[in-house]
Image 1 (cartoon, rainbow, N blue to C red):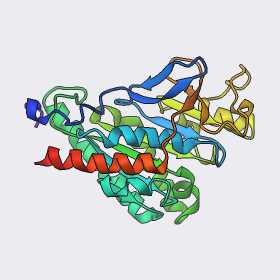
Image 2 (tube, helix red, strand yellow; image 1 turned 90 degrees about the horizontal axis):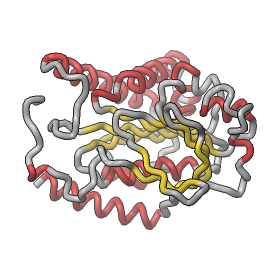
Image 3 (tube, rainbow, N blue to C red; image 1 turned 180 degrees about the horizontal axis):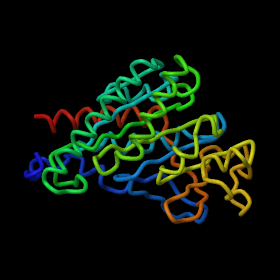
Length: 273
């Protein structure tokens, strides 16, 4: 598996790869905001209606055009990510039992990949390896960690999620997660701090903003409470080793998503042929 390289025929038909930078939007100075998502994870948080879905949809939109990745969608509300369902490799609705089963499946796949990397004395997969990156998108964390199922199931979900965020990156498992309840019981510090990227959309309290970005940022003047309610899709994006960057996410309408899904189906059919 790890001794092969992708042939020229296996280059994504779209010209996009999950290893390419993902376009999110523009910052307050009008500059493009692109992030390298591979080997990293991203957490979105903010009050309902603040525009978190814009961040999720942009990442899914990029991933949908990449034939070198799989899309695993966990949608506690069932309709937020539902437009992408037909091209998802895995789609989980508001079912805590299935969500846990799928996370356990991801954990086993991650462990299998690490075993193979260890055998060939490698530290991570790369774009030349014939193995797909798995992009796991979870919206909304709170439904799986605090609402659906029993307390034991909720705690198991959080443990599995924390393990995937902590260890999955080098094995090609990317976690993209969002919550409209940014509080310490939903996003524990031990989970938040291992997300390489974090973005806080409008929050009602500085504590909620700091729950996403990290303790102390509000006191330094970086608080999502300062984002006006009418500024949907505006957030503070924090990258590893940087400072929060105010930006506006690109907005995908339902019509845009329908078009992307149709094109993605065409690309995947061609790639599989």
